[in-house]
Image (cartoon, rainbow, N blue to C red; front, side):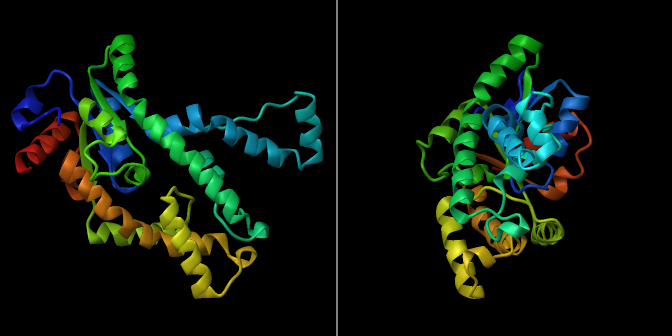
Length: 286
């Protein structure tokens, strides 16, 4: 780790961290606070994925749907309208919409083959966006004068790395440049996330082996065929299993590559100084 002790972290003139953990536990909230209230550069991995690496795919998908509407088709063919994604740090809906959900086409579902193709696109994009982090650390300081840097990683970071492999390319690159900090949720947080997801299920990225197994198990359990699957029902069924699948991977990342902080403690952070102390305590407890 680039900071071996709490004292080294507290005294470091340049503080660089990567936040990881389940979506909804405060990564983006803390990153926004650090950017707004302190001398911190905020690098969003999901934003980078949705703009640099998948922006064209997302826009083409919008255009594909627009071409089905006669009026829009004519305007697009004559370059009379411009269609683009308005993705932001706080609104990643265009990326989620592109990833999609497998199941019945009349309910907005994709074929499972197309779904997995888009999942693979996301995997490659996420790895590239993570490996871009050191370059953005340099850019943040050279261009804008930011010495402090927070990388706001996506919830799926644990799906694209092997935390038990000491030579994992992504993790070794990140650990050389930042302190990896896991925001660990409790069982109550997990239950709340499941309930929130049930109200508004959204597409997510998962490892291929996990998805193939989940899809086969869902079809077997329900007796449905691919065109009969309700896309929302499948992703709801999958979500709690996905959280259980991710938890030990997050834990291994923290154990082998960084530190962990509790989500309830993160919720009490209201200033950059609070955040610095929270991470210092995590280093002391390691």
